[in-house]
Image (cartoon, rainbow, N blue to C red; front, side, top):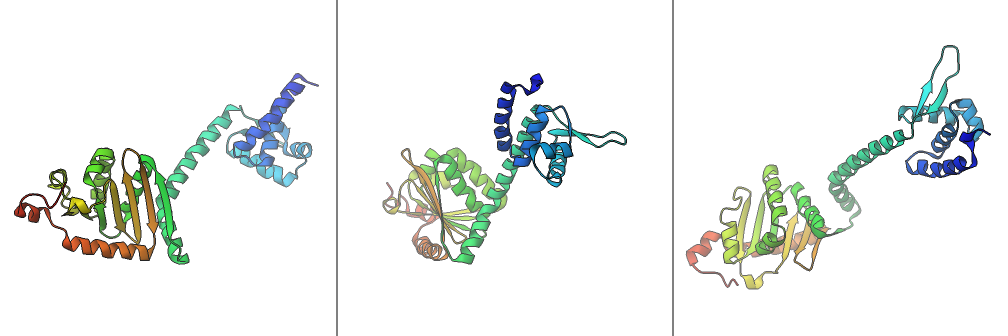
Length: 279
């Protein structure tokens, strides 16, 4: 037996097969490549006989392996084509390529997933609930609103947003401005909120104020497109929840509109002077 077929190498080849399967090759592709790693070159018919697969399958698989660059096809005049394994480093290139494709596919899915979920929920009349954690989770909750087909209705704790998500909020509002997504916000009346919102993207955002005693702290609630999105911003907890249900949406929308009618604009507050029971 030649040195290339020694027992030690054969054991490694067995392990190689497991690796090849993890490289997203089919079982028959892994067997073909395993065989070619042990043999300099071979005809498709010979490979089929040795790995005990049908010729039709092997012919199909060697062409695919050649297309992705892990083996090469060698043609000669008046001779049957033979196949030879390329350097194993080609597998790394294959994995890198598939990893990049998977990343792009995942990004594409993430872009369309909210619409797919919406369609499913409407068709099957099921409320959709998604839960997120950490700053990345808060970002997903915020970014979901950017596809809103209506003006977002929001309750916002400006001080909590500025303290815990200042950079993220700046990026969010710039994207919202670019997309032209408008928002009506109800915020806690405080000197900080008044100063922060005095000239805050007034072309796409309208804010009104309510008493600080009535406002839930460290919380952001956004109402849009049959969805309710909650975000908690605090040192102890950063979580986000998106609920998609028409009835829950309608309830929160009605409550928002009622509160909006009783909330005051910044101009009204300044005319009255002082703070409206703000703390």
